[in-house]
Amino acid sequence: MILSDGSKAVQETPASGELERFLAAHPDVEAVEYLITDSNGVLRGKWAPVESLKKAFSDGINFPVSMYGLDVWGREVMETGLHVETGDRDGFCRAVPGSLRIVPWAERPTAQVILTMHTERGEPFDGDPRVCLAKIVDRMKEAGLTPCCAIELEFYLLDPKAPPMPNGMPSPVYRATSGPSPQNMYALEDLAEYRAVFADIWDYGKKQGLPVDTMVSEAAPGQFEVNLKHRADAMAAADDGVMLRRLVTEVARKHGLKASFMAKPFIDVAGNGLHVHVSLLDAKGRNIFSDPTSGEVKLKHCIGGLIDTMNASTLLFVPTWNGYRRMQPGSYAPTTASWGYNNRSVGVRVPASPAEARRLEHRIAGADANPYLVLAAILAGMMEGLEREIAPPAPIVRNAYEEPAQRLPDAMDDAVRLFERSEFIRRAMGVEYRSLFAHLKKAEVAAFEAEITPLERMTYL
Image (cartoon, one colour):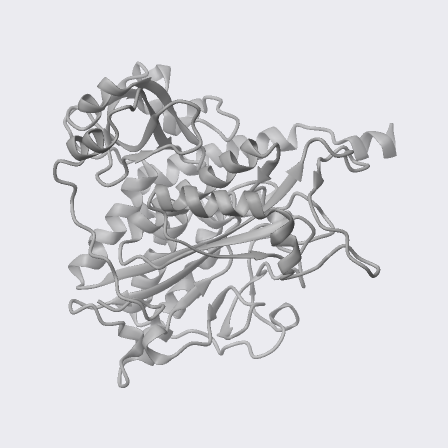
C-alpha cells in the first residue's frame, strides 16, 4: 500500500495478546496512566496500579459519562444532559488496541493507554469524540475508501524562569539574532539551541511508537513545528496528534520549559495551527487522487465538499474563544472558505507533489483543537463532496486574503450558531452530538462575555 507521501504503509492490525506481550517486555512497570480525550481535546483520566490493566482490556475502567459534558475549564455544563439530572451514571472505558505504551519521562516505570467510552450495554458512547471519528471512517470503508492522514502541530516553547513580557505573559524562548527582529524563520541554530528538547521528543516518540518526522523552527520567536508521518488509519493519526501534544508538553516540563498549544498566545506574531494532510486510498491501496483519468475530478469533488461544509464545521476546527484571534489577514491562518494549488493563504491547499503523493492539506484548525473532531469534520466534508459531486469554486492563485471568497466566521458565537443549525453536522455526527458540543461552546462564550477585560477597565473606569 502506497501512502500519500510516497512511502509504504504499515498495516494496522487488532492487538492480539497485547497486554501479555507488553508486561513480558516490561516486567518492572508499577503504574499505568489512563488517558481519555474529552470533547475539548483535553486529556483526562487517572493513575492506577499496573494490575488494573487486565480490567481495562476486558470489562473496562469505570468513568462518569459526564466527563464529556465538561467545558474547557473542567466545569459541568448542565445543558448537555450528562450530569446529575441523569444520575451522573458511569460508562466503561476500555483500552484502545495498540495504544499501550511505556512512559519514558516518568520517574518510576509507568505505562499509558488510551481509553474509549462504552455504555452499560457495551455499545460505543456517542459522546466520545473517538466514536464520532469512527463513524465517519466506517462510512468511508463502506464506500471502499481508506483515509490516509498526517498531522502537523505548531507550538511555542516558553521559559517560566525568564523575565515575563510587559503584559505578564511568559516569554518565549528564542536565540537572539542580528537585525531589527528576533524572528528567524526555519533557523537551524534555533533548533540547535534547544537540541536536548528536540532530541528527547524524537527519542521518546520512537519509544512510544509515534511516527515523528520533521521538526522546524517556525514563523515567530520560540515557535516550532513537529510533523508526523502519514498513516493509512485515520484513528491512529488522530491518536498520534493527541499523544504528540502530550509528549511535547512533558518533555518541555522536564527541561524547565512550558509548551503552549494556545491558538494565539501573542497578538503580534503567528498563531499555532494543526494542519492535516489527507489522501484517499481505494480497496487496492492506491491513491485515488493520482488516477490519471478520474483523480483530478475526485480531488475537486472532495475540495468542493470541504468548501461547502467549512462554515458549519469551523467550530470544530476553531473551538476556543482565543482561536478566532489567530484568523487574521496575512497571518497564514485562513480567513476564507477557499482553496488553491501550492498556496498557503487558502483554507485547503493542494501541495506541490508527484502524482502518486497527491493530497489535500487542510489548514484551518488551531493547535488547541480536538484531533478526533477535526479529522471527523474533514473526512465527512470530503465524503459530502464525493457523494454529491460538489464542484469547488475557482482556485485562488495569489493572496487569498485579498480575493473575493466566502468568509469564515470570525467570532465564536457566530461559529456556534452555524454549527448548531447545520444539517451537514446533523448528518455527519448526529443531532445528539451536535447539541452536546454546541452547549459546551455556548457555555464558554457566555463565560468570556461575562468578563470585563483589564483594557476595558483601564480605558473606561
